[in-house]
Image (tube, rainbow, N blue to C red; front, side, top):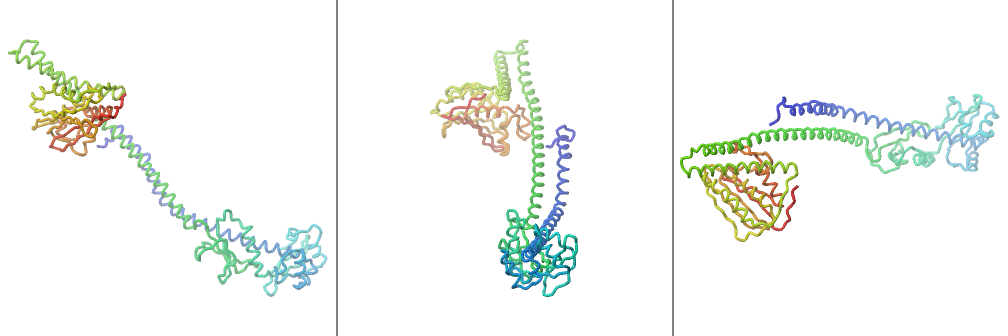
Length: 513
């Protein structure tokens, strides 16, 4: 039963639920709704990043292509550029160590004095960067045959001329494109797969084989040198869709894991609180039951002692009966107090056992001799079955006797109409087995393991009609564990119970501290 809200422990659970779990669940719901939007934003970010990479790749390629035109113009010289014929330009490129088949056309159209142009192209200390600075943002006259133009200007910004050029298609494909993507394209750890293709679908360059349709970003190049070529890009390890899906799964998994941990924490708190509440209730019942069990024998002892003291006993036989009652009730009282004291020592870790080799049959008979008369007075019949070949076993005689007494007390308490008890002792499978069988109310299957717990009493109205401390079987289990053995029970409701103590013959007992 869950504790009521007015219970401090119950309020603690409610505070935990209200302050931690409910806000966490609410945050989880909000997060689950926001994850698709975050995933879509991530997808757009990755696509834009890939598109920017292709854009800058095209810009880089075009800059490199123009730089090579300027470099070629510098080594060829103004006079030969003005001539412009391939048979004049190509030898100059070959002499300078440049590919002579790089250009289908490379010539110069002069707009001003040749001397100024010559100074811009061949002056001392001039290099490609100097020529690039000399370029003006001018619109050169249109040219035929698909030639491209680069305007040139002198440092004083006066127009010097314009370069006309047309790259050879094979040079663009095999040198410019391939060299750039293999050496200069920013692709750490080859994280991206790049393909360059012709408009008709032929592949110009590819750094990893890829099936059609796998590329996620495409760009048609519009720069003059590479116009019409297509750039394709994809992530090598995971596609953008897979990356976004992984993000969704990771975030959802993290949220679910946190919620599960909080739920497990709440369940643990609830279980601990419930166990503590049940334990507190059991302790309260224990105090009430022990008080009742102490009160009953004390009342009888006092009653019969006063009767004897006042001399109101009619016969000597009656006096002897009163003495027996006083003796029986004092034994009950002693047994109860011993149980409580032993349990206290066990809880404090101070319980000690004194082991010695002893005759098990003798211990069983001693216990029965002490309890035979009270049992007969209550109408019980006793059947004893002790094997003749029982070996001596290393035990604590007092503790073992106490365990047997506790089992007998339970058999007496919970027997109703059929008052018959059987005690059996025999050797089996390397153990000495001592069994106490009654024909009482029995124990349900689901409670047979719990009855050995401290303070526990079965949830049965017949059980609760009988007062008890709830310590007897807990002590029995502890005693058997100290002897390296165990206690077992076989029972069915309404058909009685059989409790068995199993003592190992060879295994050394554990010393209980």
